[in-house]
Amino acid sequence: MIKNIPVQINTGAVKDMPKISKEIERLERELKKSPKNKDLLDEMKEQKEKFEKIEGGLADGLKKLNDLHKDLSDQLATMTARKDLPDSLKPKIDQLSKIIKGGRAAELKDLATSEKREELHSNPSKLTRVAADLSGDGADFNKIEEDIDAAIDKEYAEEWKKVEASINKLCSDAKPPVRPEAVNAVNILKEKFAALKKARYKDYEKKVADLNSYFKTEIANAAEKAEISTFRSGYPALKGKTKLNIIDDALAKGLTAADTKKKLDDALVNQRKPSKAQWTQYLGMTGYTINGISDKYDGLAIHVTFDKNSWGKDSDGGICVASNSADVIMDKLFGSVDWTYQLHATLEIKNKNNKQPHVYWDGTANHWDTTAADNGKDQAWQNKGKAKLTSVLAGVKADIKTKIQKAIELEGAI
Image 1: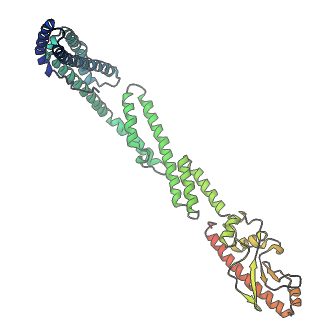
Image 2 (image 1 turned 90 degrees about the vertical axis):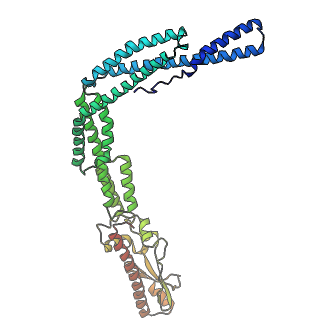
């Protein structure tokens, strides 16, 4: 494209050049008489600067025309070498080339001669006429460029429709289907098709095939992302934050839907096997005492306690809530350890050896006979006491079982 047209050349001040020349001649005569007269010297300097400025404007105008001529010559050469020129426009291009190489080149050469002879001082219209002609040539060139693009666009309109239809079909056939907007189809087609049009006589079919191949890859990627995005509404049992983090990470890293599904499946498997830390927090057993026990027997307080050894060996990620009942999970958590370490209820009374009577998770009881004997209690007292602690322990178990059942319903999201 030819820019900076029409060329603007200011020749308005040229009309003053004869007057300025006469004034310079007068000052030269005066200075011969008074060569050191400061006023005359200053005035001479001023008049010469005016003259040189006007001359510089003419020279600058001539340079603009020569630059425009070179730009036109170069761009015409590039245009002529194009392989996609419509036959209908070749005569116009040839005609403009002849004008630029012939008549305009001769006119510029003549202008250069006129400038040297200072003929432009009295006839600046010669310069402005050539400027108008060259500017018109630039406008003609730009119009030809527009006509070339329009002709090629028309010629390739059907090809565009074919390629666009092919891309749309690729989108609709994707699993799941992909909207053309998802792969920026229209904008990319415009960009790629511009290059395709210039290849009309060189590997065109291969370039179309490459374009289809490009979109196949892009559409496949978009389909993968679309399928991955559907997982957002799936896996309802998986903790929201865990699920979303996996999906967002997969989209960012370009993972396949299959790989993403495996990560989600693995996360769900892990979620269904809570860690010991999760169980202790969820069951409210972060310390060593079951809170909320206010029962008494014979005026004596009862408490229920446990320690780190009261938890079964599978309690830390070894129990799947999806494949075990609440009873089995509860037994694996607390009933599978040796009775001496089990969660147990204690009656707050001591024997002479400072021991207190207990009832353990599996029903084992100890220290009742010595505690009764040392405190003047009979067998009936022991039996009722054991029954009371067993009842308290049963309440604790029931509460734990209720929470475990809820953990099963939550698929381990505790």
